[in-house]
Amino acid sequence: MDPSLPSPSASRPLLSWLALGLVAILAAGGAFWLNQKIDSVQAAAAPRQESVINETQQAIASVKQAIAEIKTAQQNLGEQVSQLQRAVAMNQGERKLLSDQLGAVSSRIDALASSSAEAGSAPQQQSQSTNRRRR
Image (cartoon, rainbow, N blue to C red; front, side, top):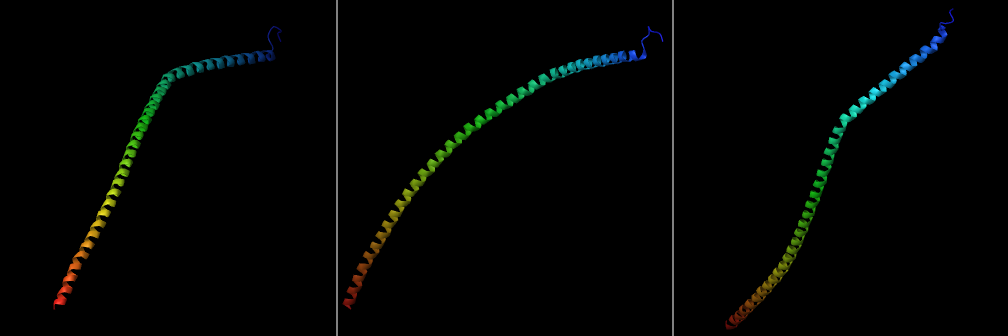
């Protein structure tokens, strides 16, 4: 064999190193390409994310406003219910007073009617006893 030619066993490590270098270059190129692809996808997704964030913030603000309006309406309704309860209580007091007065008047009328009946029956008894004496 010619000493100037590399031996087949010496060319194998060189070939392995060349293959390894080629794989490393391809891997680095693939990583760079994927990184560029991911950056472009993220850049395209960023405005959509911002619009989604803005829409979400607007929805949250409208929900907060609706809650505030509901609380205000609830307070107003609570005040109206309290006013109605006071009015009903006052009306019940007036009805009780009127009922008591009506009961008192009714008992007076009954007393007058019974005393009138007693007074009316007393003269009739006297006239009947006078009529009996005359006979």
